[in-house]
Image 1 (cartoon, rainbow, N blue to C red):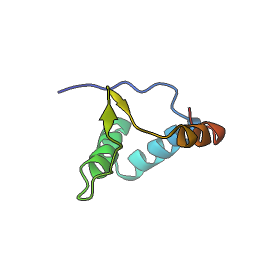
Image 2: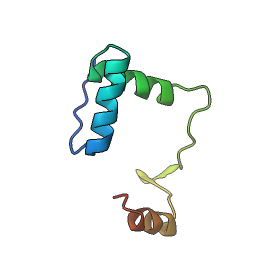
Image 3: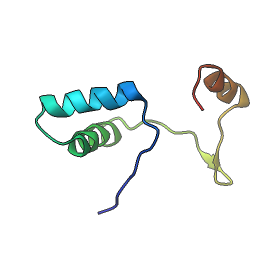
Length: 72
């Protein structure tokens, strides 16, 4: 089974994951997998922009807005 290593997780996200794992009596890894499975395997998949030349077609304005909001 593939593995995934996450770095630079925001402290608040890490703490919420820890608390949620404790609440559900499972490891943080199993809790994260559950969250990912529920979101990524949902009946209504998220519509991603099409790829062109290996890159998504996201308008520059949308990228600039995301950067301005602190998303890098």
